[in-house]
Picture 1 (spheres, rainbow, N blue to C red):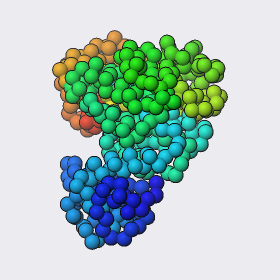
Picture 2: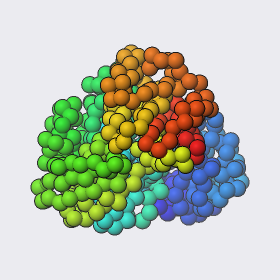
Picture 3: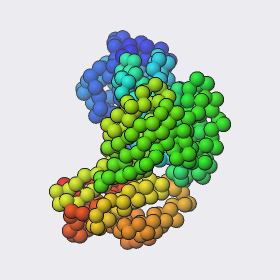
Length: 438
């Protein structure tokens, strides 16, 4: 999105210094600068103001500042709080948009549902969406500010770590269609309970317009309990939903095929995305597409073309013939259970190994949740290796290098498979990448 520096200053009630130049988009990361963008320094582990010079050298042509750094070097806008100013910019950008906006939240599956929704809506024209997991008070406004002029649709992922977070993001994004994929024991260490998680996800429904639509997981009671909060039309998906799948089958690479049934009719769908647990995400995406006018057959085409963000059910064959399932971007009891079942369902009689890192932010339920995962793995015939956590009740390996050495020593090959999964803090994506190269 293009905007003048003076428009930025007016929107955030800041002080403009330097030339009133035209800007194109924004970033908070000096390593991700694009020519002509606005640099927004934020306070994190380091003060982003330290990188203003680097951002300008890389091609940014203006910046925000809350401490006067680099005033006079280039065009800038002085504000009391750069993070607050970024959220105001996001809300301002949203007010200038006329395309439908889709907001997707949920304890599990929101990024995958977002990716699939983008693929479906792209059948009707260009779609702008949250990159990777840009789903917080930084990522959402950046996604809004960086939207191109009038795409056919905008798809936003909305995340939360505490009550009120979804309401805050919806205040900026003002979605027309809201999707809740599921509610599960995620971030309970911060929120305190699954009920609190459900209430937080339900904040998405509070602000939907009366002519909008709430797309809800029919098979999840905690989701449906939030339904009365919405004054918008409701459309459900899942086995008990209005948009559902019948005749599900899985091929040798875990790709699901099924008949999509909906109020708009029926059609056959063949997913490239692996894992039977991705069917519900596909149904959510289909529901959004149908609500927004994508023809049924084009919905099926879009679902077949959908690809997921990195670190989510990526199945790759290593040079040794070993099948590596990289699902290492994040982990909670629900998603780990789904990944274990997926690996256990792979054809052939080879070894099934799960390399698991910490499932973070589970609070007092953490120990029991990790032990339940191990019990499920044993039930499914999947061996478990733990990395850098004792919660699984087995002697942990220490770091990616030791884990790689142990797995390599097993001489796994064709017919064998390894699942790599853990919360992002576990850092196991590197292990999955190294396994592929072995």
